[in-house]
Image 1 (cartoon, helix red, strand yellow):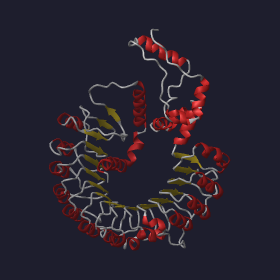
Image 2: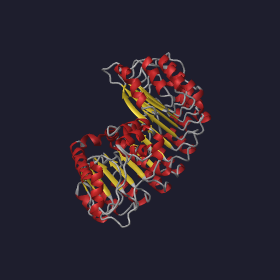
Image 3: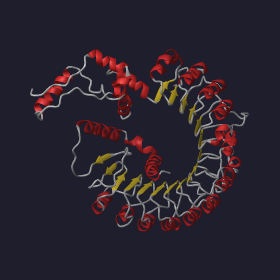
Image 4: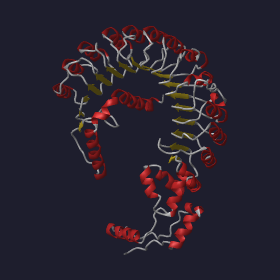
Length: 538
C-alpha cells in the first residue's frame, strides 16, 4: 500500500512482555518512516487490519500509565476491563486502593486469593446486614495481616467483633488515619486499643456502638489524641465516656454530637481551655443548654456552629457565642418551634459576626428587627435559608431583597409569603443565582415567569417546577432536588450516551421527586457548603 508496515512481534513476544514488567518501558518501534504521507483511507485500512489481527495497542504502555487510566473509570467499568487480558487483570488488582466487601462469615474461604490480587488496599469497608452472621475476630485479624498499609476503615453491622479482635487489628494496622464504625458490639476496650496503637488517627466516627453502657470505662485520650482532628458521635447511650478523648485532643478541629443521650454541658465545659483549634461544632438533639453554649464561646476560632433541636438553648447562650466567636462563618439553628432563640440572639450575631456567609434558620420566628441588621452588618452573607417561620412574610422578603447585596442562594420553605414577596427579588439582590420556594401556599407559578422575564440568569425552583436560566449562567452542578427540568435555550449538542443518561435521570427525578424533597434544607446546604469549601479550602 505504498509504505512499509510496522513489524509486530509474535503472540509469544506479547505474552513474554506481559509477564516481565521490565520490558514495559521499551518504546522502540521497528516501523520504517515512509517517504510520503499515507492516504487517510490507507491508514484506516491498516488500523482495521491490525485490530482484526488482535494487536494490543497498550502493550508498550507502562503499567503506571495504564493504572492511571483505570483510576478514571467507575467500579463497573474497571471490573469489565480487568477481564480483557491477564495484564489488565494484574494491573487493576495492583492499582486498586479502595475495596468494599460483604463482611459475612463465609468470606473467610476467599480472603487469601482476594487479597493476593488486591495487595495495595488502603481504604477498606466491611458491611454485614442484620440477617447474616458477620466476620469474627479471627477473620478480622487475618484481614489486618493482609492489609498492613490500611489508612481508612469502615465497619457496619460487624456484630461478631469483640474488644480483643479490635485490639489485635489495631496492633497490625498502626498507620490507620480514619475509623468509622456503626452497629457493632465491641465497647470501650476496643476504642481505647485503637487510640493507643493507631498513633496517626485523624478522624473517628462512632455510631450506635452497642458495647457502650452506663458502667463503661472512660475512653481516651490515648496516643492518638496528639493527631486526632475530627470526632463524630451518633446515637450513643453513654457517649459521655468519650469526654477524656474530646478534651485531650489538642488538635481537634471538628466535633459532632448527634442524638447522644445524657447531659453534655460538663463535657463541653472544658472545650475552650484545652481545644484552641476547634473551628466546627455540630449539636443535634443533645441535652445542651446555655451553660454548654457559654463553654463553646471560649473557642474563639470557631467558624461553623450547628444548634439543631437543642430545646434548652436560649438567646443568652447565642449572645455569648456571638460576643466571643467573631470568626463565625456558618450558623445553622433549628429552634424546633420553641421560640427560645429569636431576634435578640440573631441581632447579637449581626453585631458581632461580620464574616457570616451562611445562615439557616428552621422553626424560628425572626423578623425584620434581626434580618435587617444581619443583611447590613454581614456583607459576606451568600446563603440564607428560612424554613417553617410564621413571621417571615412579604416585608421580610423586601428587606432581604433590598439589603442582602452579596446573597447568592436563597431558600424559603413553609413561610407565609406571597407573589409580591418573591417578585421583590427581581429588583434586589444583584448577586442572586438561585432561589428555592417550597411549601409556600401564597406563591403561584405566574410570579416565576415574571421573575424570569426580568432576570433571565436566575434559577427559580418553585415546589415541583424548576426553570433554568436562558443563558445557562448560574446553574449548579449536581443532582436537582425534584421536579421537571426546562433546559436553557442554546446549542444542545450531546453524545448519545449522555443524552440517554440524562433522559433516564430526568425520569427518575420526576417519578420520585416527592421523596427527594423530604430533606430539602439539609441536602441543599450540604451541597452549597461543600461546593464553597472546595474553592475556599476551608
